Length: 444
Ligand SMILES: NC(=O)c1ccc[n+]([C@@H]2O[C@H](COP(=O)([O-])OP(=O)(O)OC[C@H]3O[C@@H](n4cnc5c(N)ncnc54)[C@H](O)[C@@H]3O)[C@@H](O)[C@H]2O)c1
Image 1 (cartoon, helix red, strand yellow):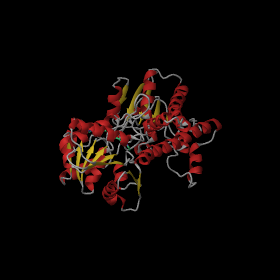
Image 2 (cartoon, helix red, strand yellow; image 1 turned 120 degrees about the vertical axis):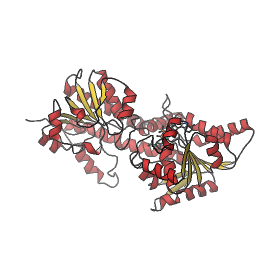
Image 3 (tube, helix red, strand yellow; image 1 turned 180 degrees about the vertical axis):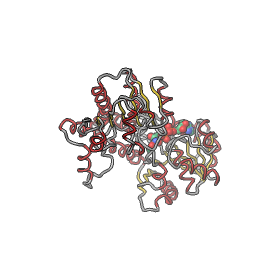
């Protein structure tokens, strides 16, 4: 199939590459010349395991092209995917500026019937807004073309996006016509050979499904984080509680890890957008309001625990392991590490952070001489008064504890992801404070 994908970010690029991998002819369009130049040279502008190789393979096989030339891409394609960003607006709603810009561009250059697919996460009713924007552009041109509109929300997880895209747990498709349903079924058939379902529904339900999915996952995390605060007060261990409830099939083992809170480019903004959507409909979403507040509180609590234990932070060196919002990505959008770093800097501390792939973005974000980046996880520890673990990268899980102790000024760890066992921390002689678990104090 001949497909163009607008937006070469975490979703658009992975989607385009995976469609190409199945043999389709893909044109990826972006307004960012720097990204397009990198992609043309076979280099991914984002870190996503396995992505570089797939880009190179598909360029070589002439199945994928990268361009800023929207007109040619539109004219040559039958399916047009919108995968641009939908960041939070000041009032919490999703800012549809980029989506509607693409809609206008599509109508400006359309030369025959097309299927237009929204992959960006958008509020319920956005497909109708896209249609309006297109009708306006057609009127301006004095030309009109027929088209099908489809909602096809994306559920991939950064860090395993290729796997999620090639073998989705389900595909959700909102349509208005039989033709659109047939086209989408044909496109996704090779991806669903494992028997996973494609759910075809109306446009509004499809748009709502994406928000409901993210809101449900964010709720699980915030609820566990609330439990963790009670555990700390009563002396219970949230990790035992997690195991105890996770084996109940009605609850399940996923997304019930307590920690320093969720971040990333999706949960924070999508929860806010759904709360705003409810408000616009005179429906106050009390649970989701609390989910968001709890998430913020969890970050603040963790910072206060560190500050209280350390006395004051002024002039102290704090080592930080991980700045990405989760392992497997260089994405730092809404990452808990950003709030923590800012708090430490505000207190006059010096922060030396290590992250295997996200350091560059964090450096750019802060551009502050009191925040430095080490090029290895141990170097970050030299002379540090404590270590703060914020992202659970694999290499942090079984470190050389003797080496850590020899480098640090004090053997003190604040673990925002509960990556170490209490038993090991006791045996290794660390002061150890984690989330929702009893504190460990070194005896020697
Ligand atoms: N990141 C995720 O894990 C994830 C998962 C599921 C859904 N989503 C949703 O997918 C959408 C995209 O997210 P993302 O993280 O890929 O965003 P991103 O910010 O990484 O990428 C967006 C890209 O769109 C480009 N762009 C902006 N205007 C354009 C235009 N007029 N024409 C062509 N390109 C244009 C930007 O230059 C940028 O490269 C969002 O709605 C997001 O909520 C994201």
